[in-house]
Amino acid sequence: MKNIFLISFLLLFAGGELGRIQLNQYLSLYLHDFLVIIYLLFNLKELKIIIKNLKKINKFNKKILLLVSLNIFLAFLYSIWQRQFQFNNFLYFARAFAYFLFVLILKKNFGQKKVLQIFLTASLLMLVFAFLQYFFLPDLTSLYYLGFDDHFYRLAGTILDPNFTGLIFVFNWLYYASQPQFKKGNILLSLLFLTALTLTYSRASYLSLILAGAYLLFHSQKVQRQLIAISLGVLIIFIPLLPKKSGGEGVKLERTSSIEARIISAKQYLNKNQGLAIIFGQGPFYPHYETNREGLISHARFSDNFLIFLYNGLGVFGSCLVLILLAKEVKEKTHKNQYWQLSLLIALLTHSLFNNNLSQAFISLLFWGFYL
Image (cartoon, rainbow, N blue to C red; front, side, top):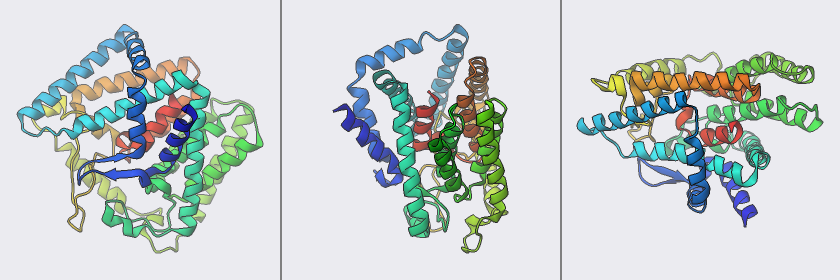
């Protein structure tokens, strides 16, 4: 029964956006979300134990978390007072917290290695689907009318977004490149994920891999350094040689339209906090809905920059608290020599300067699956 559950979760997770259920024009769920909810309900005892263990964190972090909780409470109160409260805040926040607890319970029940293998296998399936999509269905422009970006000759996979797919491949490349044993299988998989990454034409993913890979390079053994150095060299050399004759704007690496759009978006999001919201924000995962050029309401939108995302949700006070916690986490991982986890964090934060990863279901769940 347990194996059936794991296989079902693996397949639904690898299916990406194909398992999306659009409940209304504002709200959607994924098929794997139902498995997450059911699993949490059937493991309430383990859930209580984990929550109790979370209470055993050191006093400093506990104080910071209490202040963050108070900040969130005040942010919600202010948004209610301003008649701007949206229940979807709770739903996004609940899903993010549920993913975190789900991975912790999986790890407790099945062990760290098996949980990691689940997400590695799901990623491998995503890799296969992504190559099939790129070679047999390169034109995704018709998906624009369903609320997705219109990609043309870019590897998007089942996530239907080259940027998020690219980060998933970065996570996997970091895993195989950091393995202490120099196995042929690890080398082959790292090259396959690297090849797929280049075909996403995702500049944020390129930068994430280069920075996280460079960090890993200086904190690895000699054997690992060879693979990392060769991979980074190949990526840098071959990026300028990628095909650019598809006619799509997305394959032009020198494009500035997306950069200009992000700058305009950043200015708009920075101006959304007014009054006390500047201090406490509007509550985590406060969604803003926009219409595309066809007048269709897009899915919930968040700032592409995670610093602005934090500021919108938690204000100046809460954002500073979260950054303090983040600094403490980096210090602790460095002290424990957990360099692979830190490379994952570097990749996520680098990529999150340009994409709203903190609200993306597959990125957040896969990150916890690897990081924890």
